[in-house]
Length: 389
Ligand SMILES: Cc1cc2nc3c(=O)[nH]c(=O)nc-3n(C[C@H](O)[C@H](O)[C@H](O)COP(=O)(O)OP(=O)(O)OC[C@H]3O[C@@H](n4cnc5c(N)ncnc54)[C@H](O)[C@@H]3O)c2cc1C
Ligand SMILES: NC(=O)c1ccc[n+]([C@@H]2O[C@H](COP(=O)([O-])OP(=O)(O)OC[C@H]3O[C@@H](n4cnc5c(N)ncnc54)[C@H](OP(=O)(O)O)[C@@H]3O)[C@@H](O)[C@H]2O)c1
Figure 1 (cartoon, rainbow, N blue to C red):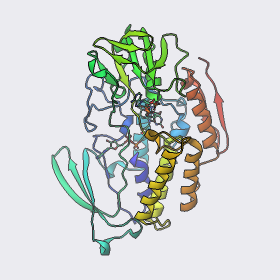
Figure 2 (figure 1 turned 90 degrees about the vertical axis):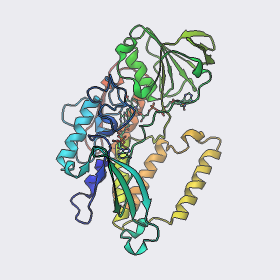
Figure 3 (figure 1 turned 120 degrees about the vertical axis):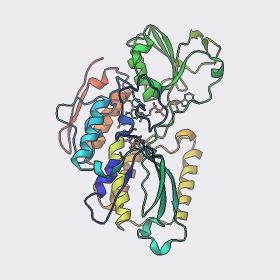
Figure 4 (figure 1 turned 90 degrees about the horizontal axis):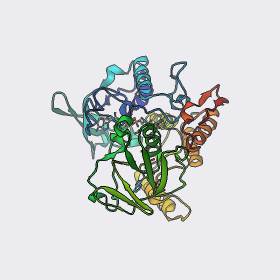
């Protein structure tokens, strides 16, 4: 979604913006290219690379996911499929004439500050200029250029993480990461162990439950917010004791484990991502325009260290692995703060209300929640028509 950033600057004669994308198309995680089911590619620049699955639908309504000034097409379902989001992003780039400024198949390989370059620094608020080195993946050539400012929008969901799990190395059956899951047909009549209790684990379980014989979902925290306990062939349990070559050993017995899925642990901000990105981009532009003065680097590092210490040392606070996360109230407060400092309205009053309803739907455990209609009516109100399980 670097394209939001680009939109903010294009048309402003003060700025010349270049957007580098290593893939051969825009869309980021919202790509599900032909061939990605047969070719499980790990390189994000590959034309077959995907992190999505065939039946993936958004877990937030499109009225919370749309970028400012460009709604999803009329008549879209509230929770739409991957292709609809991908078409939407391409439509956005076309509408705002962004494509001609995007360098596809270009990978950033290094970004280094121009130390001691004070006299050439044009954006004093953010320090020195930057030497950016990029590779043209089609020509296999490398180039370095100097930029006044750099905004890194590389996403956070492209490095699959499989944690150390007791005894897993003994297991000889197939083990897949959630980003390698594509199609429930692969699991027809199988028994599958899913490890994790986040959105990936929950949504993939719902999808696989249409074909698999049984799914055991192993979680560190039973009773976590995400759950699938309304599906007859799904059983939630605690983490396995260990594994042997063919089986997983649970506290109360063995389950032949034909496949294991891992969800990946990442940072969380409990507000929809799109309003968050919109606000961060506007704030960044306010810094470049000189409207906002950042504290010194030392002060910012000091603040970060003390904030992190406060979060991790409070026994009621977040556990260390999600200590950078912002719970919902804190996340809205953060956006309000950005808006106040940079002089913009961060979101319409309807956005937190719609978000609350959307999160309640996700955490309800109703496997049919993506059939709900959850539409913004205007800046202050929305409608919610619920589907039953
Ligand atoms: C399975 C899954 C389902 C999701 N479902 C939802 C949902 O329903 N609703 C929702 O709001 N969000 C959802 N998300 C979150 C989603 O990540 C965000 O909505 C959004 O796509 C984030 O956009 P982004 O631009 O920050 O990151 P990305 O979409 O990851 O884009 C980052 C881009 O940077 C490029 N890049 C990375 N490194 C380099 C480099 N060195 N050089 C050049 N280019 C580089 C990548 O190729 C990529 O195209 C989901 C995520 C996943 C993984
Ligand atoms: N549209 C959709 O339907 C959809 C589908 C998939 C993903 N997504 C999006 O994709 C993003 C990522 O979601 P995600 O579910 O992949 O990641 P996530 O929210 O970070 O969840 C990771 C899960 O892995 C578990 N885990 C991590 N380390 C573990 C370990 N060592 N042992 C056991 N369990 C471990 C975590 O357990 P704890 O809870 O105990 O920490 C957590 O439940 C989110 O933005 C989500 O909304 C959306």
